[in-house]
Length: 506
Image (tube, rainbow, N blue to C red; front, side, top):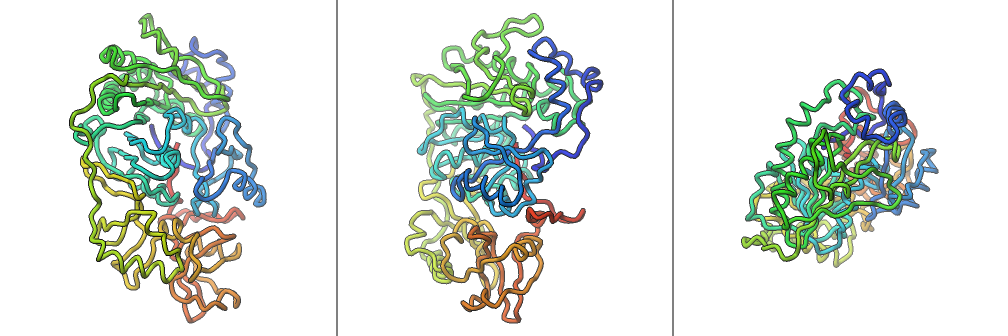
């Protein structure tokens, strides 16, 4: 499905007259309360966020937001999530930039919950960008083991990697590939998420401009590709494994009809499991469409209409491959990330010494040199796929091709919490100036420890990134220019020409 902005919707909502003149009327007999459906499409969609479990509890995040006057409502169906006011602009708050939270629409958080994830599983996110569901999966795996996040677009992979870096995800290898052509020699997976590219009808509350472009012709055009993707996902699924297929569209051509064809072709080699989540209201999947009878098991799918949970629209199906099905004989041969330990060791000693990191810190990770720019860090038990070749494995944490070498922002966000030296704690005004990449004067007490040169910058104990304390008496922000749209909750806004905050996802 398509990525959307984290900001509150500024576009005009769909009007009843527009909806009555649109292709949505073909769903009228499917919807339990048409008037409520129309009313929901006419309301702005409130953003949802979830707390990064490696950095803050949801209670801690809620308390932080309350202190800053940000209204947040806990979501009983999603214990780690909060719903904000419709006008909230999540990407422009310091806590978002510090990776304490991620913005992701309520219904978009559901597919990962239905994967039945546990540490030790090998997982594939087939159409992953811009990475919200990938990050969910990564943390459900304990930020360990092997998760492969694939997308067909190199630009979208960059957005995905940016989100993973901000959140401190280290158990992911990213690949750029048409997932319908994913090589079988890459091995099979215990869990697969296929959040398929679709006509995005369910996103109308955020993108009402889509309304005039919707219709069965668009759905019919996308369906063949969706079927190819699902067929490949089935082949990549390990016997006994689980596959979740989801879209953010209402169109049966992209949902039940795709599944009906794949189930018929797979026969006894594929099961459709009933899908449900406590606290989430949904309608059953269709077993008939336009006079055509469909597999009766499709009633076990989830159809989520916008008025059911005051959310966007969504469709979810849960599939399982029986354990007795023959496995892919090619299996999976993991790749050892490149890097000479003897070459890497001095860099690691230098970082640990300067910032006062724990002596055992590098034993928790696998450090490798992926490019000439510097060092990547991944979970110690992460195994990149042999095919297709990863774009990246883990997190780029230390730049060695500059003088002096320096931790990246992602590296600082991940490791800086344990730094006991060369660290500067900012006040609220300094925090805002830091995030705007401005130079500012430190307070005398901030210089008392003599921490000059590169330092880890933090606010209220939460790391923001790297800075330079110059002996001339100023602090230079090293916050990335591509993230400098981030501002504090006190009301700062980026200019029209400012780079935008890190992309967020559905």
